[in-house]
Length: 533
Ligand code: GLN
Image (cartoon, rainbow, N blue to C red; front, side, top):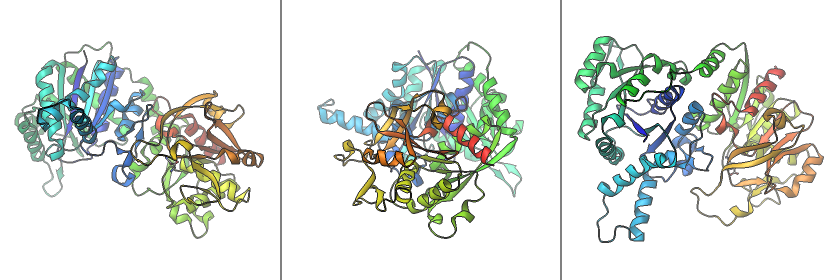
């Protein structure tokens, strides 16, 4: 039987519940336990796939093609284990299931209510992973902040789960904020007391408080919190601001969060934590011997979270190369006019980001012409790859009207076009080409060298695709399809001949980069940028 850890948040959002959950999971995993993490999101969208990146940051795609919350990316990056649809549940999905059951007559004669029907469905989902796998521990992060109207059914479900499982099988960790008041020169506990009261009102006594703080918590403050919030004194954990998110597991180890949890759950782990690989990564991350600047050309740059996995993949790839990767966000719209070389001249490499819609495309094409002609390492992801095809067809093959039908639906030269199976689809949720697909790489390509093998599998999220009617012309002019889907023959990777590094991929390599498995294409892109430098 699996044991359960729930993580709730108090006082304010953005305290980093995902990072705390992932860090604790890492420590437990490092002790030889099998752990997974799931996220419950209180919004009514069935999944974040239909949300604008400005609203919700990046949409993270799992192997099985679920469009999920970006916290799942942290779980995978920390644990180096894939997640799935079952690891992300939203209020929308809960209601959808209950309403479908109601329509099919499952509750015939009964009034369908939040309690017990919605809470029962939350409980069913909370324990679903246990039925599918053999986990020792399942950590559930409850999105939102206690006190939100949306969170109430989750807290009620949690109260019931805790009661049913009993103390030794279920622990609640409450992540909270201890603000520092400059004028009073004091750390304040009152907001935490209030948020714990909110939890108590829902019938939940937290077992452990993890306190986000900018300053170390004095012993007396921990004692006070323990007394007022009714937790053990050793269960008030300090989570001080860290230099990088990858420091947090070690900070939590120092604070003995894992030990306290294991004691409460009465688990004897197989061994002491083995974090050697993690520490080696941190050592390299913190002691770079060189530096490169990479221009990230996108259109959601105002919000770093929109490209979360790309930023993290650069951190992993930088560490492998013992190189600090300075990622410079470049808004593609700013490249549409003026002298492009003055804007890109300090970059050792350019990544053109994924995206949707027409806005910002012209600037991406400008950036690609520049790096193609000036032998600057180029990495195009999804829309970035599609733009590289359009740019090449326009400027090298002289197909003036070349375009993606996403940008110009009426173009006479649709070099990027809707996939045939997409043409009939009108519904937007979960209908793209999603999740893992196989790809075969040709030998002697840059990508083959990077991966060290020809059979790979990568994750996708797109509707449009390279139009194979243009393949021969494109290849004879030097832009080669070096990776293809073995079944459908869809083009997955393009590379420019006689260029140090010009690689476009239809898939999303950033989603599979982890601390222990940095993505090979990011690693070799950074190598190429270093060489250029
Ligand atoms: N908008 C493009 C498509 O749907 C690219 C998607 C992406 O970059 N994720 O095909």
